[in-house]
Image (cartoon, rainbow, N blue to C red; front, top):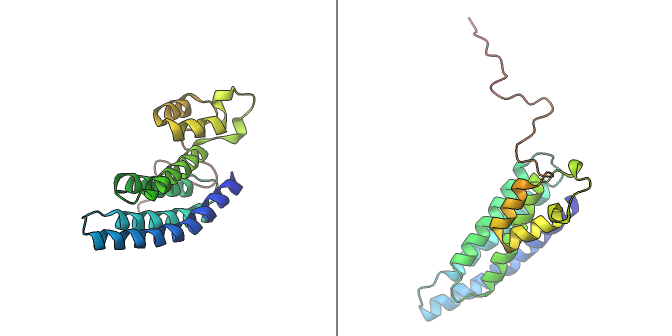
Length: 173
């Protein structure tokens, strides 16, 4: 999945420039027509979220912790929300919103997928199928995430990390 994260990050960084230029044109059209739409501004937000998520995804692709992937997923899902709700006459924004949703779903699945326990599983418990169902029909994808044995839904602590409950508090005189 490291290579997929790198590819998705590079695609979203390059795509953000294209979305930015399209959004400037859409904003200019909105201004000249005086139609009161905010699709150009929404496109600027989508472009910003794409570049932020791409940078975070590329920078944290080798991390074993979930924070970077979930942060990138959050930015992708925010881009999908902005793009789908505020597209207006800028219909290309629906395409970019769907792509952001797909990238965000892939990052969420990767954050919870445990490849070490992926031995003989049924076809509906495989990584690719759960990702596809999460993109196409999210409630079923969430249910598959929940019942699959290959997804670690609780964080695993390892290394030298100590939770505040295990730290000893020392009173200094």
